[in-house]
Image (cartoon, rainbow over all chains, first blue to last red):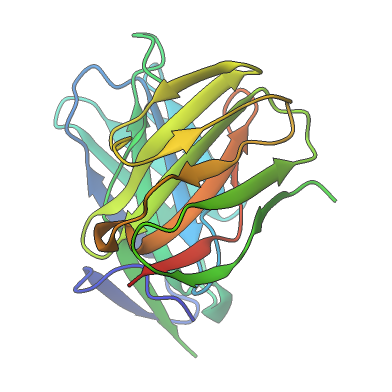
Length: 114
Length: 110
């Protein structure tokens, strides 16, 4: 498959464990954040988003936490499965400021061992 | 099936030979964009379009052109490709929030 990054931070977990992937963002004016999953050879896939007026949002098996004070975003995956193995990255935007150019993080490679 | 399609998926070309990568979406989205993805740099936006005949530069527009003559299509044009444009390219479209990405085009410029 396609290699989407070299020397990415890597998180290795056992199947069934919970995973936490972190992202530090740069722009304190950013008001919209998205987590993406990218499997080898595929395009990024939307997982979950959160706006800056929230600090937590839950989806199916995933939770995103936003800490605006320290400009930190995390993605929690419950009961991680081998199919969750992929590169995960966050994106920030300043939608309220009229910017439609998202800034993407470099990503974290999640490896789930059966 | 809702999707974003790109063609070609793989392309090897030579410096200076004009090429076009097509992108099409069937979700009636107004917003479309092009990204390049390079090792260690992550995704960077090249151009985006808010609607038909409305396009704007992203972070790395140099050496690229786009057009948006109809809502579903957003081709990326490299008038004179150079080796530093060797990369993995993604087209995307979105509604209000969720962005849908195409499968990617691996371009190599020799």
